[in-house]
Amino acid sequence: MFARRHPFLFFLMIVSTCFTIMFIGFIVLVSFGSKMMNTQFAQQYTSSDGNIGIVEINGMILSSKKIIQDIKTFRDDDDIKAIILRIDSPGGGIGPAQEIYREIIKTKMDKKIVTSMGSVAASGGYYIASATDKIVANPGTITGSIGVIMEYANIMEIAKKIGISPVVIKSGEYKDMGSPLRELKDSEKKIFQALVDELHFQFVNDTAKARGIDVQTMATLADGRVYTGQKALKLKLIDRLGNLDDAIRWVGEMANIEGELKPVYPREDKITFIKKLADTLFKDINISGTVTDNFRYIIN
Image 1 (cartoon, rainbow, N blue to C red):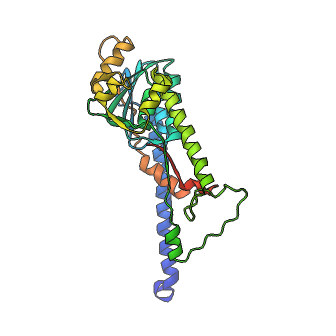
Image 2: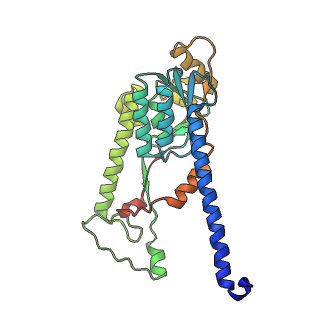
Image 3: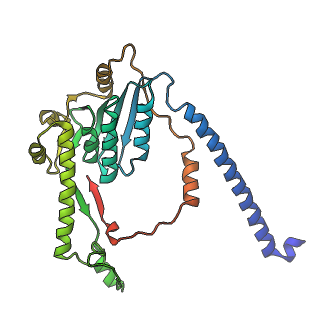
């Protein structure tokens, strides 16, 4: 009877009830997920008796958090005698690559760490690999691509056609450089070129230092081109040809591991979906502070 007399209120009651049930269910899932995380912390590897930790770096390198966490976990575990970086990445952001590079340099003081390159370990992938004690690649691995690229899309003509007129109020002459709604000035191009040159020098200097190669020699190789693993070996960009198993055996010898070599991986987070859902529902809204965020600063 109530539903007929007050259909709108009845509908709101149904929606509110459903939402309440869903919210309670979500809280239960998060609580259950936390318990799973605590259990996983005690069982953080794919095997309980491993002695070589394998850290996988796959796809674009846009964040260093998980990779650094895995490296630290293996470094701090006395049962893990050596570490393998398994890289299959075309590169990524400069900041994340440099953060991982620094973490590897620190880790080398405690444990041997070797890179095993997959199908591709180029640009930022090579940046990271160069910091390890040794590098193993397949003959057909694509590596190198040592360089920095900055790019953005200019939509000025499209904006004109649909009647968009940008209004900019800025605190300094260059605050809006890189805006997709206007052309770059010559002075702005020079600033961005200087920035790219500086970042490129950092890339070249770090890889040369880590690999024990003269900076000028590395600079001649760092024109952005890619190399096969076989060519990279001749250029001393890598140390051996081989697959992941070869890298495991080599790092086992370097770390003087006696007996069976037992590689282990960090255990996958089983509640990733729940965490992502929570992040989506409750994340903060960030406001960009500069128009130059339209650019991509990529070592790629």
